[in-house]
Image (cartoon, rainbow, N blue to C red; front, top):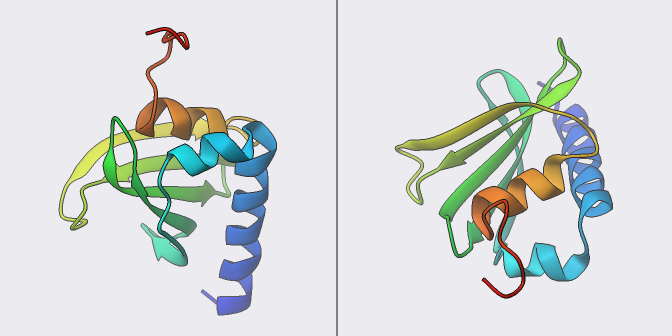
Length: 111
């Protein structure tokens, strides 16, 4: 894949993540790296995170055929797939990542 295409897709993924959640939510994930890459033949934004529920990598990959994203959690050394969520649509990546990395669905601010 061409680097220019990868950067375009990674920037769009990043924009859609930011549209779905606030900056303080994204900061709570402890993102230390953002990398445009290819994962399983898909343009991907890789985030190194250190959240409450997950410490390691979050790969957000564009599934062009289905016009949605696949979100994959990987261990810190990238050797183990922890969880995969597919069919994540453009308005959902921020909240899906937050539920996988920082807070469980159903938690309130008091739990």
